[in-house]
Image (cartoon, rainbow, N blue to C red; front, side, top):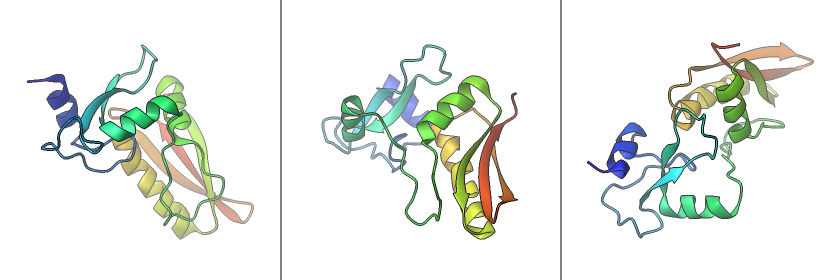
Amino acid sequence: MSLLDDVARRDGWRCWVCDEPVDADMSVNDPRGPSVDSRTADRKAKVAERLAHRACNTRKGAVKVVIAWPDHLHVVEPAPLITVAERLERKGGRELVARCPSRKDAQEAADWLVDRFSRLVPGLPVTASVDEGGGQYLVALATGRR
């Protein structure tokens, strides 16, 4: 069993950067092929290696990774998710991550965030809440730790 196989199985054969499926039968030299990425230089990170497409891993080395929010979500001032993930992993607590024009939009964003964080930071239990304030709806992520 190789490191690639172990990491890929743990990550469910999904790229941690783009969240798209990774084809196990694709050549490791193909841009859409599997590769093992050292997600962070932080030695305290709970999960140091992650599965990524070869192209996502290579591109990540040239620029800071940005986890895109889906276009179908209606959010204002979305937080940079990598930064949020790193802070929640390190400190725990609660972070506001977006504002939305309606409760429905906020709930859709909250549901997407919980699902996305389950793959972005495996093992970190994250919950999302929606709070009304100032004519808008605020989406927050929280961990059980404070």
